[in-house]
Image (cartoon, rainbow, N blue to C red; front, side, top):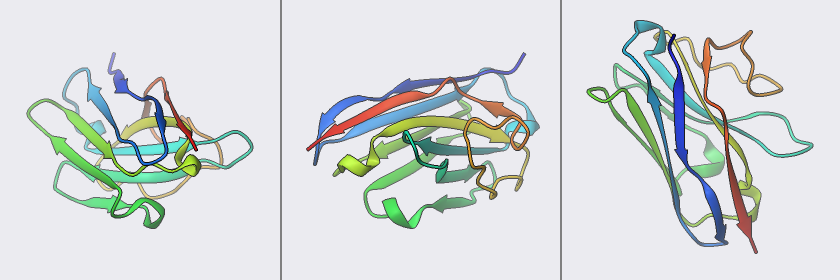
Length: 129
């Protein structure tokens, strides 16, 4: 059974930094695209980033210049480095994965297994002002 295991997250003050990591438990072409989504209470699910095994990278405009995503295909891991965090970045962050070029649509709620095959357990990011 393929699983996505997330690590990182926590609480920081505004302006602080955090790093999230997501590892696929075993290689599968069905996880060629890996994405980060987030959802705050009362808000819809929001796309943060997409990393394709082929190098395709998408970063949401709202976090460009502050969030940086990297991927290590040898370790089946994607890392989200977040700097200069703002209170509006506070949310539960979810790692997701699906086949190549499958990611782009943003569901209203995350996780959404009807839209993407694999999801992590979610990790809380809290940013205090």
